[in-house]
Length: 282
Image (tube, rainbow, N blue to C red; front, side, top):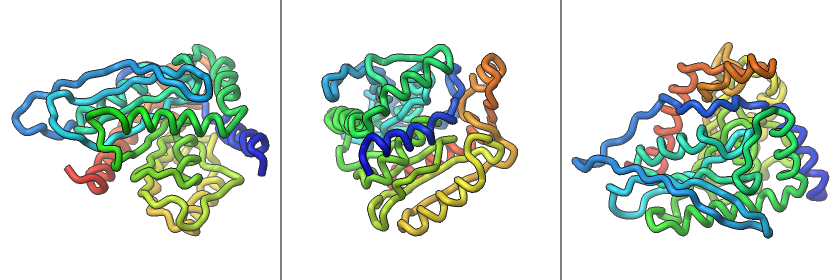
């Protein structure tokens, strides 16, 4: 399959993922203790490049901790690199990881309207190979940071970002953990057996109209056939964009079926923490 055709398929699968834009900071943090030293969470804006495109990411880490620690890539919703994804990076830093909220659109672009979000996303994915390169460029930034153990890397994503990290897992990218939150699940390039050797978490809203049950069933069959270590969690009655505290307001504003769900947000975040601890250790 050509990259152009694969890109169109990927776009079609993701276009339905109209995620909550709100920049409200998530309230679901439960940092691990850092011995007796108070945490010193640092956030740094990072400019980097891929294919001649300038990208603007955000790196967060606890400067009070010594030594290299696992790194976590965080992929934004279709609205772009905003405060929501940065806060998730800071939450991960509070848990003892180095986190890098990457930029898939270039120049840190953010959308204020769904039409702009769709335009930015389609531009980014018009060349799927270039989109993959942007993800890998961000991974290099994270791995090269002095606080990161380059051999221990995870990737998480929300909505559009969830589809991105699942795509990279299907490609066999060397990631220890991949987690998708209310992301698209469909593909015409299913994972080959043994391609992805890490562990996977998928958190899905049972009432999400953008991800039908047939797609859920096909995804689970695909991952089983590929031998992926998958934890798939469905939250009954929960709608799309359930981890974003600003989702409900945005859904009302643009007449989109988005709704924040605090219980699902907290449970999915707790499951991610448990998976990271089990994979990397405390």
